[in-house]
Image (cartoon, rainbow, N blue to C red; front, side, top):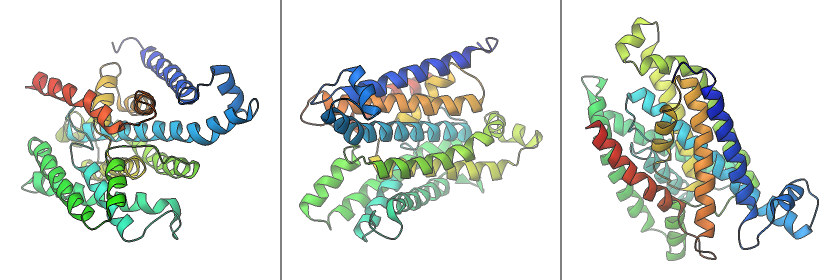
Length: 333
């Protein structure tokens, strides 16, 4: 597998072609079907005016937001798996997503919104603080003698997830019925509120995460072999761990702030990509593309399978991810 030097390029080309096709499909299907040629013309601002409005103002922001959310979650999962030397690591399973949702709800309850002084960065910042709190709790629960016990990490993540769920239910009891219902639907995973401003704001967070994690690829290669091996290779192990952990948390938190809790993307996509390529630089970039592809397809299915009703995108990813997670656990056992 590693002797075929063109293989990563082939995987990348295939993923990009599939992603382009998925985006075109997402822009073309819905309550009003639009032919591929008309979609392309509408993207350029020409053709039927109603098609231009549907494509550019309604479907394009949602498709781009889905791609960014999926890419962010997959990239976060790839980084966490390298840090923890565990292919079952995932921001959802480690409590990061639950903490981010708590932060978002608290921010909403205290009045943070896009109309405030921080603009569209307000809720993602609150989500990041919530995710950071979850990271600290998970690390505290998995710490033994001042060092992180990877064997206890998933268990600690399950406990923090349960705590985050309880806190969310407690906070939701203070809201009115309509607000609680809308937040619960959002929390289950939804891109229905996608806007151009949301796409631009999330793109900034994603760019920051990519700019931090991709240069750490060689250090992650070493960490995946073990802390002692990485240390002998001259890697500042603890510094790299902290930096990558915070960047992965930022990516997951920003994704949650704009889409709710969408699980298993950060688990399944990096695991699948790792079977095809070696090296974390390639793995990180292709995981981003694979996550974008998966979530664009999932969101398209969520809004069209039972139209005009829309189902939770988080439910779709869980239906796919939960059985796959059990299979992976049995293989590791």
